[in-house]
Amino acid sequence: MKEIRIGKNQCGQRLDKFLQKYLTEAPKSFLYKMLRKKNIKRNGKRAEGSEILREGDVLTFFLSDETLEKFTGNGADTVRSRRAEGAVIPRREAVILDILFENEHIALINKPPGMLSQKAAAGDVSLVEYFLEYTGGGEMGFRPGICNRLDRNTSGIVIGGKTLSGLQCMSELLRERKIEKYYLAVVHGVMEQKGVQQAWLKKDKKTNKVEILGQDTPGTSYIKTGYESLAADGTCTLVRIRLYTGKTHQIRSHLASLGHPILGDRKYGDGIEDSQIKRQLLHAYELKFPELEGDFSDLSEKVFRAELPKDFYQENRVKQLIKRARKDERL
Image (tube, rainbow, N blue to C red; front, side):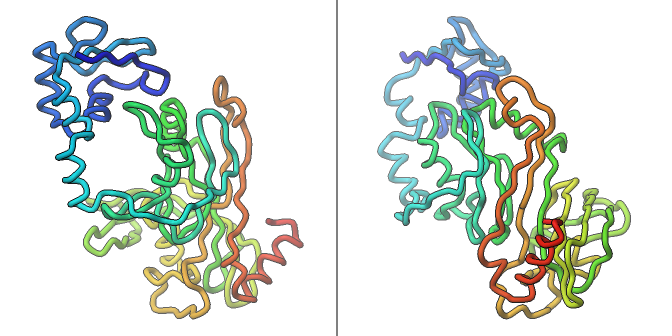
């Protein structure tokens, strides 16, 4: 028998969701069977799994030590299996995260270009793993994580949740589009001063590429993108973008569909060569938080910005656009 007392980072979620995180190797059918047979109880009573856990709840597991070890992923067989699958994180150099803001519940991280937000394959190391190391790895039934994702070669602000309430609050704000998200990009050609574009996006999973359409058709998602020209030189434009909706490759594909692909974007650049630029010049630059109370009052109506990475300054024409926008106090 084993007892677990629910703490702050475990409360507020469904019992079955917690069990899936704690007994990571157990199939769902096993968990519900143990609940039905009263081998897993909440506060000494039978539970169905849909109950919302509260701080101080006691979960009792009437399971053998061998079963618990097996299904929590700590058994020798499980460890050998994970090694065989290449799931063990490989040795790597230490990475110092660029933390723009941090409190008890969240951290704002300036992700560098080239770093995955989340794993794409079992052997990958991503921002999630680095953030877990930074926070100490979390607690039983809870792992810190990130609330938004950026493409590998897009730099800028990612929100990390250090506690369950932090993850839940930030995820809800993002889902309800209450956090204003702004990006900086350098695009080919001269864009008009300011505008908001609406369209529909369709993703091809095989090619991991999206298509922009002018009308709603089956399998499409509505998108809305705002843009403002900050500086132009006749060949390219530094643009500030507001992301109203957040879909896969939205900014990259939407700008390309308007005839202004991002410099360095090999996927949506229509074969335009930018030999000195190694990745798309797109940076998640700014977050504006709404009015907030309670544990998140220190974020209320605050604005956070992430400085442009060094590779934005590699090409002289781009460097001059940034210099001009700052001189005109537009950046």
